[in-house]
Image (cartoon, rainbow, N blue to C red; front, side, top):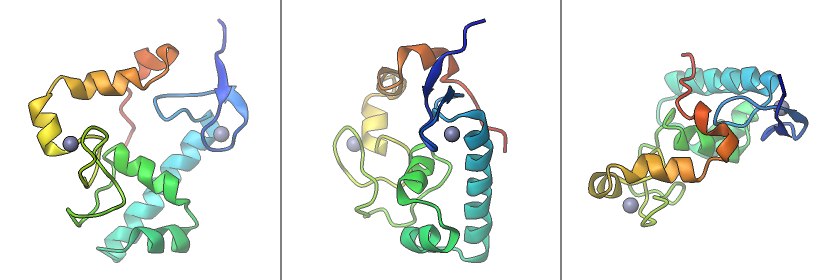
Amino acid sequence: MMAKLEVCARCGRFSEVTGIRKLCPECYIRDDKDFEKIREYLYIHPGAQVFEVSEKLHIPIPQIKRYLREERLEIIEDDNLFLSCESCGKPIRSGILCDNCKKSNPHDFQTFYVNNTPRKLLKKVNYIPTK
Ligand SMILES: [Zn+2]
Ligand SMILES: [Zn+2]
C-alpha cells in the first residue's frame, strides 16, 4: 500500500494526513483534544469571545475559525466580521455558506466543498469525527 504524504496543516511535517482536516494522526488527536477544551470552556463561560478563548486556551485563531467552518462551533452574533459566507460575503455564524446561499444553491454546498478539496482526499469527504 502506498502512503500519500502531505504537509500536516498543524505541525507542518510531512505525514500521511487523515480526513478533510489534513492533519497527521498525532495532530488529529491533539486537534480533537483542543476542541474538547473549547467545548468545556464555553460550557463554563457561555458567550466567551473568540479572542478570549484563543488566549486562555492557547489555541490559534485560525484553528478556531476552522472549527467554525466545520460547523463544530458557532458564533453567537449574526452580524460578526469574523466569519463570512464564501459565496456572497455576508457574515455567518458557522459553516461555509450563509442560509440564503445554501437555500438558493442546495447542491452547490457539496460541490463547493468538494471543489476545494484536493482530489486525493475526495473519498474522505464524508468522514464524521467522533464526538
Ligand atoms: Zn501534524
Ligand atoms: Zn451567502
